[in-house]
Length: 381
Ligand code: XIL
Image (cartoon, rainbow, N blue to C red):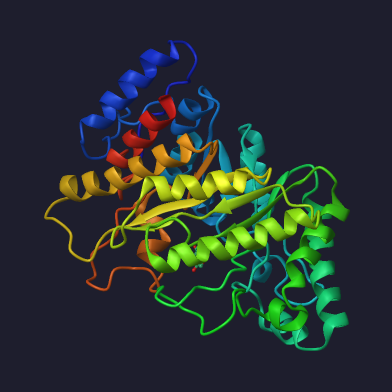
């Protein structure tokens, strides 16, 4: 199970290392045997990105960092930013009212801090991973609903202050339009417990509460389903842009929009349409981040991993080029290795045919694959 330790970056010139890293990745070999050379040597994606003024990171799971050395090594090598996949969500942080548990988040913060990595927060106000007690509290009148939301934001931000400087304040507030996978019958805003309790104003309230806690925190609104060239994605872009413009006009403290980018190869992608959307948001004075990139393969896939990986990489390349061209500087993938991707483990998004999605930069055996190389090239220009 073990692999030879990575050699420290820094002695050889970065350009030479990048060349050899890409070449090593090109071999397409299986995982290194104990004692054999590291097939995924530094620099990692985050260093390649950083050298060109970009940042790269990935969603991480605290328990895997602690129990799977190859997983931890992959993160150490590739990720400059860590975002907790579960550990910053409401149900983890406050499973019962007033009882907070920061153990998982602390573990990620400590691991990252020891290696000079940044941690971003995800997510303060979200309808999912939201415990039953809080759903019930949202139904107990506006004062109670606002109080519960305010208490959660205050406790989480004061506890993580100075260690997390970047938070998804509101996650997924826009309703999925007709035609999408999970359409909502009516309304432009998701019919969440927060929305039912406080109306669309809950979004503004959450951002203001976050800003009151910390004047310099980067406050992000994060959503999905706005990347592809379909009528329902177009409608979702329109809804999101309208919300963003409204927030900006009313001077609500928001700094950035996170685009999740859970891409699907069943859907068409038009770089111009997507780039235009990013520019529209940036024209409002906000940054745009890619926060959760991964790629679901099409229903019909070719035989063999090389052919499948080439298609995934092609989509990743088109997406990265459009985003970079439109001014995105920060990219995170939702996980790093296929074996732990929610595209494999979560029945809601796994393939119905039982095959396993290959939608992340590293394969099941932690090796860099074509998607990694395409992303490295996109960063390196
Ligand atoms: C997902 C996790 O990856 C899954 O393991 C979990 O079952 C559900 O949540 N958008 C988000 C993320 O903002 O928090 C979600 O993460 C994926 C979709």
